[in-house]
Structure formats: C-alpha cells, structure tokens
Amino acid sequence: MLLVYTHKISPRLKYVFKHICTRVLGIKVSFTTKIEAFIAHDSLKMSYTKQQLGNEFFIKSHEILFEQGLSDIEINIQDWGNTKCFFSLGEKSAMPFDIFSASFYLLSRYEEYLPHVKDEYGRFTATESLAYKKGFLHQPVVDIWAYKFKDILQKQYPEFEFPRRAYQIKPIIDVPSAYNYKLKGIMRTLGGAIKDVSMLRLRSLYTRFTVLLGFRHDPFDTFKYVINRQKHTRFKFIFFFLIGGYSTYDKGINPNKKEFVSLIKHVGDYCKVGLKISYFALGDISLLKKEKVRMDNILNTNTKASRQSFSKLNLPESYRNLIDLEIQEDYTMGYASHIGFRAGSCSTFLFYDLDYEVQTPLKIIPYHLMDYALLKHKSLLDKKKVINEIIHEIKQVNGEFVPVFHNYTFGEDNRWNGFKELFNLILDSPNEA
Image (cartoon, rainbow, N blue to C red):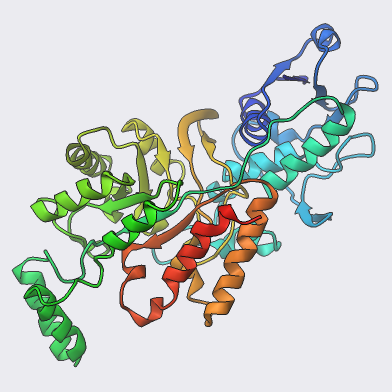
C-alpha cells in the first residue's frame, strides 16, 4: 500500500490518486496529514504537499487539487520525453510535473465546464480541446504519466512488485437503426420511396423493394456477421440499440415491433446490450427514464450501460441523469470526428462532479476511435496505419482499446469498403506481440 502524506485530504486529491495508483497501477493508496503516521509506515510512501519534509519521496503539489469550483488556470504545455505535460514543478520534486493535478484536469473534463464554442449538435469538439491544440490528443497521457510515476517509485522501492495489467479491447457496436428498409412502417416506407424517385436514386428504390419483398438481405442487417465474430474472440462486444421515438435526429425502428425486440434479445444472448439514448432524451430525464424502462423490459434486467446519441455530452447534467436512473457505465466519452483520447486516458475512470465536488459511482469508459473518423483517410492502407498507431499507444501502457463501429459499417455501402478487415485487425490485436 502507498501512503501519501499531504497537508489537506481533499475529494479531488483522493479521486485522482486512487485513479492513477489503484485503477492504472493496481496498488492501494491511503492518505494521512499526520507526520508520525507517515514516518511509521514501512512500505511505499511519498509526500504530496507544498514543501518536502526531509529526504522522502516528494512531489510538489499544484493548488488545483485543493481548490473548489472553477478558476482561470494558466496552463503551459512542455515536452517531457516522448510526451507532453503541464503544471511544472521546482527542482526538489521527484517529478518535473505535477501529474496528479494534470490528470485531474483532463479526467474531470475541467475544460468542458469553461466557456467554449459548440458545434451544430451542441457538442464540445476535439478542436476546442487542450489536447488537440497542443498536439497530444493521440496519446493516453494520463496512463503514460502514471507509468512514469511507477518507474520513479520503483527506483525508490526496487524490491516492491507492482501488479501487471494486460492490453484489452472492448468493441462497441452502435445501432441507431437496425434496418435500412425493414420495419419502417407504411408512411416512412412510402416517403422513402418517393424521395428515391424525386432524387433519381433508382438503385436505392430497387434495393428497398427487393428487401421488403424478401428477395434481398437488408443492408443494415449485419448482426449475424458481428455475432459470428463475437464467437471467435474472448472480449465481449457491447451493442447499443436506439429505442427512442422517431425525430429529426433519430430515425430508428419502432421498439413495439416484435421482430426488433426479438433481435435485441437474440444479440443479448451473445453480447452485452446497452441503451443508446435518443437525442431529445439527453436533456429530458422523464424521456430518458421511459427509454431505460423500455430497455429494461426488453432485456428483462436493469440496463447498466448507455451511450448518448451523436456522442453528445452536457456536463455535468448528462451524467447526473444517468446516476439518478442507476445506470452504471457510460460509453460516450470520445470524439466522433477525431481519433484520440478525449479524457487523456485509455482506462475506465469514475465521473467527478466538479459542481458538487464529489466522486460519483458512474464509470466512464472512454472510446478512442469511431468508424466515421477513419473516413478522412482515403486508402485502406492509411486507415490500417492509423489504427495500428493508436493500438501501439495503448499497448505501451497496457490499456483498453475501445473502438466504435456501426451495424451498417459492415454492410454493402461502398464508403465502408474494407471496414470488416479493419474490424478484424482490431480483434486480432491482443494476439500480437
């Protein structure tokens, strides 16, 4: 166990030390403000405060972990080996940067509470982030810093054996609409057909009616393929089905359709299933509750995981609503249009509510790549290169790679050519050295 001496045990301090030490490095951590208890401790120990006590392992503390609320923090990014860091420290500190304060800034999404420009969906964008602007979005810096901390601590305590964690994957299959043509109802089908004719999309019109007449497979119905891939890997996929009502933003399948309900149940026999929250339920807890109850009834169990439509988050309200409805895990923390690490991490972390200054029980599983972001890269070779680069970054810290694919990504649309191969590349990555 690591004992940390500090001048004040704050909620922020406990939160970030437990994340780095316990979640990432696998060691227990406790805290004391009493010098006598610190001196008496005969295992791993360090002081995290304003001034060193004596000759102990010491990291100088930045003020952010002892503050409350938001303040205008000056951040100067500097190079540190093959990565970047901020909150630099004096010479006496065992590390040149306060990685705990810097990690807290990223994990708490401090910058998303500050004034920023949103996109047309009301989202915080990658280009607004510190990580993008300063060139470290492509690295899981929180995990990299944690391992740098481990290396320095190991030199101080060479006989201590740190636990080892292994690289893992957690593929997400996002299902905004299970079918392109099936189960859409008479009015939507008729409207779609008229639109095809008016826009001279004769191939789409032909496909629509061959699917509806049973002569052809619906192009979005790739569930057999994905389930088959699940059977050949030890890592569980997570499907997120949209079961909200039809709207401007969400055009899914009516959840009262028996065939759709049967599909969700069938997928649930092989993979985990969570709720894809509709766009208008993001800010309406009564609507969100209806959707959760609906999914609970379909799965015949409490829905534990969610993903927000369009990867939209309104902090802290979005996460507070999930906590109120006892959803345990959220998979929205990422950027739809950019590959990288929105919270600077490839490890699960708990949501810290900056307004209430409290660690919550909601687990945040950040995703690092969405299929749409790969479309920026024209050739299949370039797409593979980008995927291999992010896999390499995550393997360096034995983290967890969470990619997001859609059911239709594995369909017949030309723009998704080669994406089955990319998906298989990710599935095979844990088997490669």
